[in-house]
Length: 321
Image (tube, rainbow, N blue to C red):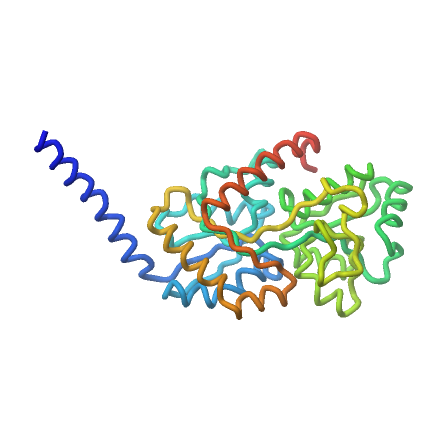
């Protein structure tokens, strides 16, 4: 009995030592954060706001790499297949973990292939048009779409993204038909609307603030639960009687699923500390985002809840077009 207890103690110590070594040694070199969207979108904007302080709190360079394509699937697939040592992470939005696998049969990964480091901010969706567009309200746009089925073109950040899902829900809510043109992020959607390549767009609101202020873009409606301080004159889908047609864009960081617990703890501690920095919070607010930190466990619960919602909605929407 005594020998058995000694062996158990020795085995426990042997298992504990590697975890301690990992915690003490990590990180010892630069960390790559893969952004699975083009520059200029909310994901790109948000992570660049916190990157300097996150790097300082980790004590190593945090290198940002944009890898757009497939609505975020290409970049996320790269992270899912990366060595799970904490040196390749995803700086993404929750839709790449939930909506994309739920709606796109060819997506090669699933939520279980990642472990959350934490959530740190969120953005609201908007429907945008050029300022000189003939529609000044959502109702005018809907009326035109009903009279001209399939003729209006709209851009989104790509199949499986929040903007794609929000537009599909809007089309379902108003029983209208429009032609989808996918892009690589909210930034390209903004440029496409400004350039007249599409007649309207669905995107996150933060990348649109500068062109809204300049008068080049008009926002017809938002997906927020209540009116945004940055867009006080713009109604919400909830006001329009369609609260179900709204999804927020959550900014989050993920590691490959088999990353050591000690690594996840070190990363989440650094993210938590970053999100308590007054300068970071001020920068996030100025960008039109809402700062809200969630630790790995809390983020996982939010993911599970959204996964149930989007899989249920995906069945109603049918195959993505």
